Length: 400
Ligand code: FEO
Image (cartoon, rainbow, N blue to C red):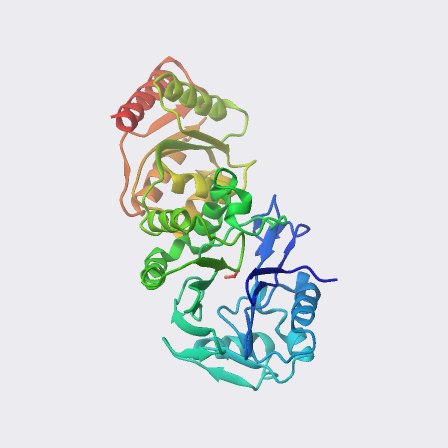
């Protein structure tokens, strides 16, 4: 079985997709699966760029063997060593024992940590080093922490192909339509690219900017990440998104409402707030029950919108655990530059309001623009009026 694409003459996609894996990194839900992209250039010398996850390793090796048709594989370039891109290395080398692994010094250390000292034929390259394949020359750009310290990109100079590793990737299987123009601009799922970025790379915005500076200095005609689709016609669109995301700039004026509710009273307040915002003319409103929706989707929405409201019941004299998880993730992923408000609830010792505000104080440039509201068990006339006022304040700020 093989399944590959010739992307341009002598340049191939040799990856594949997994639609059975339920969670990426055993953490993030994959409603549309995930793709593991790897690439192959056939020239006077032959080179593979990254391998794939163990789940599709045999397909990947079969793809390479089918294309090479008896030829040797000369190089295996490792841009990133996380196992979703390196797990097929041993299987590939069983078939091509003379191939040279091409990577950086940092990667060698991690390679040994994962796989021991079984690989000895390694060429260690430095920043800006070049690898000559014949008609194709590869230049290496080190992009540490986008996503791991050894992360780098490989740039093919004659055609302008950037093998960008995790950067510009997305959740979602490749369902035959590999290129952005095959998917169509209106159908490209930038929300899953954002969920991938915000949860996987979001913590490293300054490092992603470093990678962007290096990538932007090159003429890119084909942008080839290791997850998701390949960009050809809409490279500018994904670059625009990455500039926004890595600078922690919101994509739109809008509100993310995330609530934690046990018996429905906090939920009722959340939906009243959403209703008031909509009545005031706010168009972009996302509302999430943190007990129902995986946190990664909430994080992605907070990245997108300019404003957010967190609403939580008090639980064991703390913030409700699912809301606490969201707050912990917001801190870990360095959410910043947002306008915010909190609404807490409690029946006999409502402490969630104060504790949520304390958490938000730790986030850079996250400003509460409305006095925290505390509900006692359920909305009453006073607290309902406060929710209306909060909606008014947010609406004025968004629509101004
Ligand atoms: Fe897709 Fe950082 O690995």
